[in-house]
Length: 261
Image (cartoon, rainbow, N blue to C red; front, top):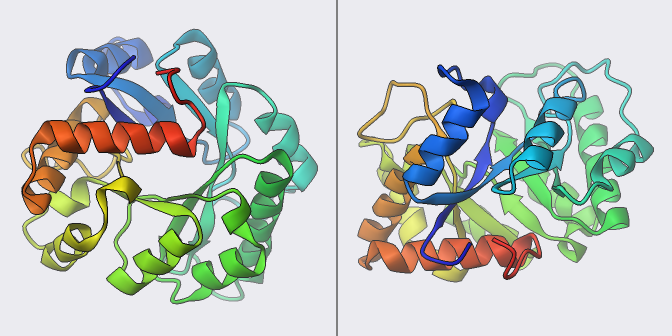
């Protein structure tokens, strides 16, 4: 597809409960002007379903990865990730990263899992999808140590400060905003979004979570990513079409899909 179609750069379609299932979710997104969706992996068990969606719907891509809060007992190796990610429908490694909010105690296992994802991404040369929650400087530190700038990626559902965003951009990462940026109590995050360049922004839903205003409190879906784009247009004082064009172009560039959407 061509611009001005929006792209939902991060969603979890199998988790969305809707009559008609995934097909209904995808059709509603297309009707709302969302031309492409990246369905993101969170564990090995549900990856086949995500891949099947991507294989059967040209408007859906997949990622391969294990969420940082997933079962710590999972035996995850670089070889497993590489095997999953070799399929053309898989455009990224992740979601991966660190989460010190939900996981407690000695989290060295989480940091090691993060490094495994980065090494796999570098081997197969596909970008990373990064989850970061209350991790201080550790995410940037590990990305730097593992030379993640060689593949780049996206800081998904960004809620951090401006300095961290700029450090991520320096490491060849994009910054993706979710429905949180539309919330009335998100002034600090809105200030961050306003100061970032359009050529480094992406939009996402993280559906079924974090539905944007005016649907806050409801189940989220890819069709709602338009509200995130509208908020970024308001913050940057530009037309929605400019945000749509920029974020879709950024998505194509990051995932090397220029002209394929």
